[in-house]
Image (tube, rainbow, N blue to C red; front, side, top):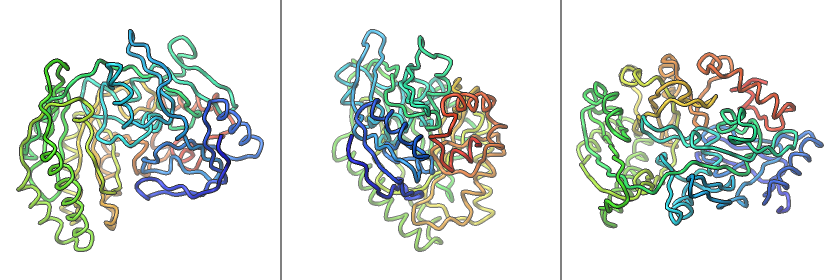
Length: 438
């Protein structure tokens, strides 16, 4: 284990920071146990940190920060069952190089791959597709160092009753040192991106989501149209038709990053220009189709720093919620440069999953990191919460334990597991105290 140091921690979005008393970088579960034991002896809290890509203070601590960078890579693979065990700090962007040679892939991914596998699963990262859950739903086993320093194996044969809590545990139950995922054979995605009218897409959102393997859309406020993305799963033998290097560079680097970043910068310093900029972006939205390996289609390179809040709502509530957001933006005269992203996911049985027990639509609102937030997030949150909304645990929100307990049927059960695995709240911090209670 590397020598302890003291250094400021900041998340990717620069929305949160803290000054841990110590930062340590263990290499083994046994070293993590020693860190937990030391924390208990000295009265410090412990927080493991992967890529720091959460927008909340879920990873902040003034106690001992565990840097997971030295705990990365493949542990083992069961090719017959499609099970792959990874060390907890492994990054999502590393998975294609790990899984590809094994002939495997994740069933679904979000559109960002900078997170660690435990950071992504502990906060409920998801993609889109009504037949598929978030990444956490693919966890079939994990190794957990609890708040008492015990190392627990949690899988179908050992402590199976804990898996629905530990697979998406907010970091409140312990340090996940290894995670076993249910993977699928490598596959291709046929991507079709196209402009469409907002009202027509809202009217057909549920039907489109049910008809496609993966459907999502992006709406730039102050415009009347959206950009849709429909992905269809294909066998690997079908063969790829990838975007050319020039086309990918023009679309992803010049348009999505350089040009869009410049537009956001102009909008930040001259907010009144934002509606015109968004309408210009609307006019240049084009169609494109390509076929490539799943991870190359799921992931988008995003280099523009932003802030984000995302809520899940019952699937059927998505159209009305978007219309209320549109009316609120117009009524309050907000200028919003970043698009609203809309996705969906299958119901699952994880205790604190945002899709627990219900098919869910996801509505994400964003702000360019230099934009002055004049209440847009607050007013959007009020609308989304009113639709039985559940905030993404890794995205900005203001909900507390009392409010959250009313929208999570298994909230009390999760807190019972927390009492068992971390009775002394070794892994607590102000964020967890706010969302889970003491």
